[in-house]
Image (cartoon, rainbow, N blue to C red; front, side, top):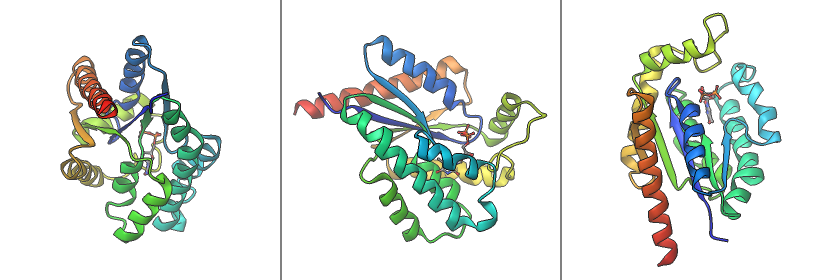
Length: 219
Ligand code: TYD
């Protein structure tokens, strides 16, 4: 069985990742591909156990090192239990957030040492670098509006949604900087457009990526 393909979806709050992942999964399945949809933090029983601790803010008082290590611990379990086995059996894995979320959310403004973060990333992914990363880019103000509308005003924002607009802007810049630095892996998708247009751009990037991988495998 040929190796599968590992796609991650990244971006700020309210960029529409989950809707787009569902649509892409349908498209790929219609073409007969085996697809695994998963998300972070979480995606495996071990990682889901850590998810609540992180998103409720329960780990926040213990500082950024604690949170960064917990995200990495969850990622390591998810990679070994779910992502690597799926890719090895030939599936296309669609993952809602992955290592770039840690680079951006734990990396920006936290004061954490860059070499510590790089080492943590290495341990967490253990070679499982995404084949393709789609960065769903949206103006943070619009993204937060959408995230609030989706959640309903009466429900409280999670640990990360509630941060200031200024922080969300810096995160957007950090994502765009990653895309500039790793153009072979990352594609920026303008997600301020209509859902159908975003969907078409994503499909284009994914089919091009799959084709490149197939050509490489034949060579
Ligand atoms: P969630 O409600 O699952 O998703 P989303 O915002 O993608 O709709 O929230 C996940 C939150 O966790 C999100 O605000 C980003 C944050 N996060 C990190 O800070 N670091 C990470 O490594 C990951 C995977 C997520």
